[in-house]
Length: 158
Image 1 (cartoon, rainbow, N blue to C red):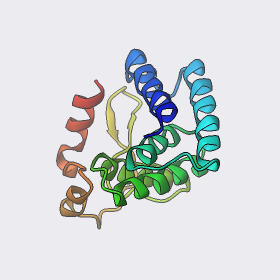
Image 2: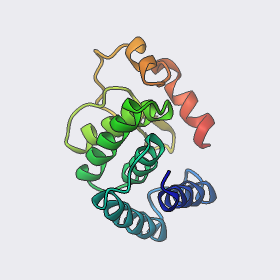
Image 3: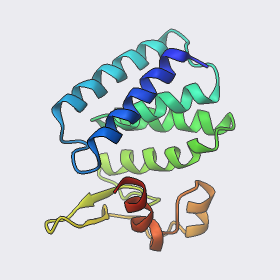
Image 4: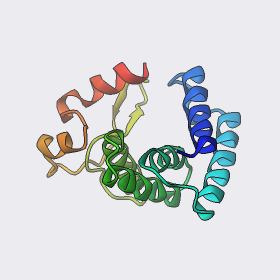
């Protein structure tokens, strides 16, 4: 396992825990740190530094916290590789990064992993959502049924 990549991953996760869900995405310092982490992870990838499933997972999470469609697409590619290599956590990250990428290019999300606060400050699933995806398909990627998605999101992040 790439120890530098693991440290970058832990820094990403810990910074988000400290800020809490209400500030994620809005904090300029966080955005700058995310950019720096993505830059370093790209260098690690380019130098062949991803070897095991955890490396791909760690890199995928950092790109998932990107700002552009290309970041989310890269996160999805990396999560797919981690998943194919046997990292069970990567299944959810694969679904979430796909949803984030699809929404970023103006398409409906498939799995219902992306949420937004509405004008009343309440959290809801980002629309549009592909209604053809079943809860059985979601389960293959460790995504909760759509009827429980919002509740699961709140438990994890609130």
